[in-house]
Length: 61
Image 1 (cartoon, rainbow, N blue to C red):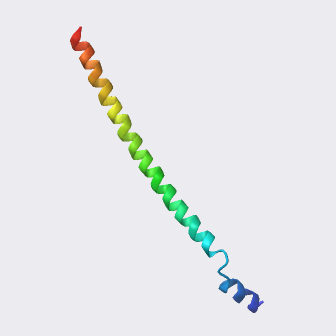
Image 2 (cartoon, rainbow, N blue to C red; image 1 turned 90 degrees about the horizontal axis):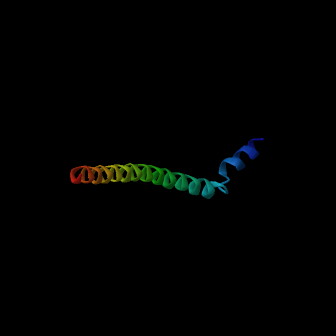
């Protein structure tokens, strides 16, 4: 049993897969945060453009 436990402890066969999964998770999290903030900026820009166009239309009447 002790030999089996030591062999599992020293086995590094799945280490690369775990490292790649952590990298993918970090990149995914960064993308989610970036897209979220970018979408908020786009909504704000769109809102200011529509308000500006509405004020131009109201002033022309």
